Amino acid sequence: MGSHAVTTPGDIAPPAKTPLYRLLYVQVLVAIALGAAVGHFAPEFGAALKPLGDAFIKLVKMIIAPVIFVTVATGIAGMRDLKAVGSVAGKAFAYFLTFSTLALVIGLVVANVVRPGEGLSIDPATLDTAAVADYADKAEETTITGFLLGIIPDTLFSSVTDGQILQVLLVAILAGVAIAATRPASDLVTDVLASFGQVVFKLVHMLMKLAPIGAFGAMAFTIGEFGIGSLANLAALVATFYLTSLLFVLVVLGLVGWFNGFSIFALIRYLREELLLVLGTSSSEAALPSLMEKMEQAGCRKAVVGLVVPTGYSFNLDGTNIYMTLAALFIAQAVGVELSIAEQLTLVLVAMISSKGAAGVTGSGFVILAATLSVVPGVPVAGMALILGIDRFMSECRALTNFIGNAVATIVVARWEGALDRDRLSAALAGMPLPLEPEDIERHERSGPVSEELARVLEKTP
Image (cartoon, rainbow, N blue to C red; front, side):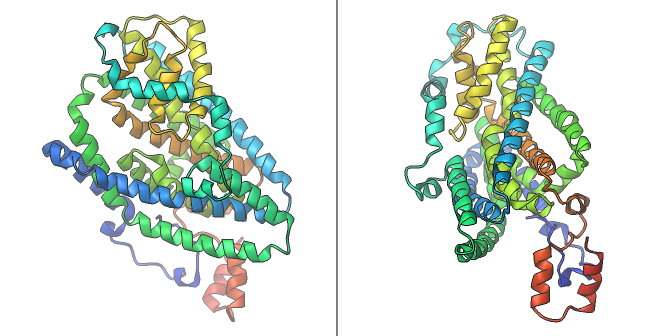
């Protein structure tokens, strides 16, 4: 995890500088570089290291459900006004809808301007339809009705055991409201959940120590299985996608940050460990528990973090949306199909819906693309085979963009809701010790006389 911990008496003295080799983001960065080297020079051995990456991601996914449940349930239980839950949800979905749509439109515009697929002149009859048949089948099975019904778990506890994020979120919201409505009788339940939360986040810290191993295995597999050379044939599409995503983060999200009083560069620096983890594993879920904790540390109220981050992982997919329209038009251009403005707008509308319906589906990026292409008869779904080989490299960029987009959304919604501690946010993004929370002060006071050093800190605490 990061070094941005709450200030305690032991933190008052200037801490000794941590050696570089002990910093998690340095370890992950080195692991990514070593994994890429192994995958390139010993591809068979690198491909065989896939279980290392898979095991780490499974370990993190194991803890995601408890993290979400504890964070959301205790956050809502502590709310004085339960109407705020609906207010947070409404503002979050307004944000998600606005920027998801903007990402789709940006991908569409860039594809029309750059035209990365033009000149390839691919004959659709020569494409391997078997390679993408599984994704096409999943796209047909994905419906909005099925998605909405899928949010409701079979039992109260199956949501946690099955690990479905939206199911866990629903149960956590209901539990939080029920706890808040039965206080003070439920105070003991709140205390138990709070204590359990400390255990859960300690477990998160322990699992994060394995991040370099997971990143090493995942990167070695990616390079060993697909090879860096596979990028050359479709370099124009890869470069266009990465550049578009970078501009979206720095310009669009940068402006959002500027209007809301924070720097996107400072936020990226604050989340550097998590971003490197996402890069190494190609999975934004691997860093979800860490993101929730970092956002709380940065001054976003727990209930806001608990509602915005998990729902954002399903509904705020900026990187995936840019990929959707960009890849769809690339395939159309590659097979020589010119789409009208009406057909392109139809693609956008379908992608808006299908991107929500495929949330949580393995290979969801490709599933959404298959569903999107199916509404335009002129573009063969088999054209997805053109980009199947590089999708793994594209998924890293999708995950990074999605991750940053959800971090920005959390801060913005917290600010809109009046649930953002600006002093803590500024301190966190600047890498400074964080001001003490009121409960921290109370805990220190209960534990005995306040030391002179702590008294000086409390005087400076807002």
